[in-house]
Image 1: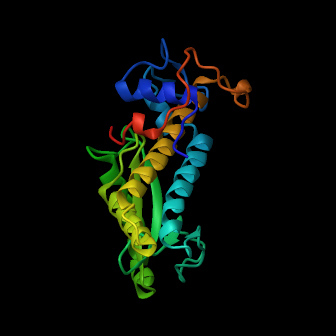
Image 2: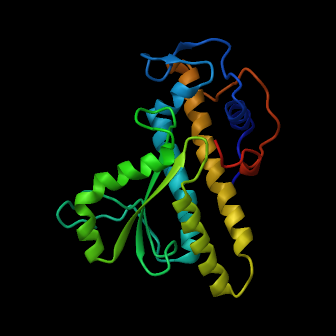
Image 3: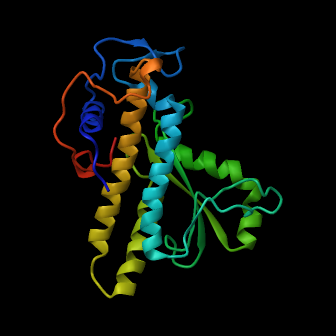
Length: 238
């Protein structure tokens, strides 16, 4: 885990340093309605299929970290809210990320250019998630479940809550194994999750660049990148 394909890596680096991904703006190939700017920022609010696939990839990478700390970790648990059983507030249900509570971890990747993203898209994303489930918080609390949004920016920045969760999971693993590997575990998980967030961004950009009738073909970027590199090259900031 934590490795990007060459074309994704190159697209991500261009976005990371603010270099154009297109020579000129054009109509978005994904929605066919809005203009895809040369920096590709529109794509981070479009390309719904790639956005959803990327969301699940980020969720799975985060879940692997939690499974290491709690083998009973579950995905997409249903029926947590008796009054609204079809709602699924937990992308991941785990005890790994908190010292004494079960967490309903709700993963979100928030575009900093989206409407109402504000100055801090990760913090505002967390606020929006909490507001959405505020009415159901008492039902979760009665079951000993803590609703915990895990928000990332489209450029890989973690909300501080995510960092706290991963450190707690690593502490559990290191304590159980009787080793001092906690820092290495955290670094590995950071790298893997960050790479998935950036891979999502690159695939969304590629989808918005490609003509609709070639969407299923392998993306051929107008540049060539180096061999696949890992998330450490990109970092976790914006």
